[in-house]
Image (cartoon, rainbow, N blue to C red; front, side, top):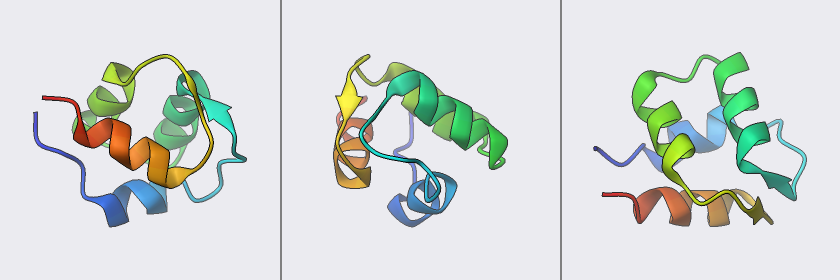
Amino acid sequence: MTIPDPDRLHALLSDVDFPCGRAELIRRATANGADDSVLGHLGAIPDSTYPDLDAVTSACSEIT
């Protein structure tokens, strides 16, 4: 799975109120037009509460 471009990920999640969980990240990314690759990565990160976009980006980069 190709790691999502951090700038694209940030654009898709720019309106998220952090901290938030995986389900909210997926919901917001979907509403903002995320493609299957981004949604796949967000769906694969641990079901946790993320404090900010950097934490989400880091979690996505750990998915192989």
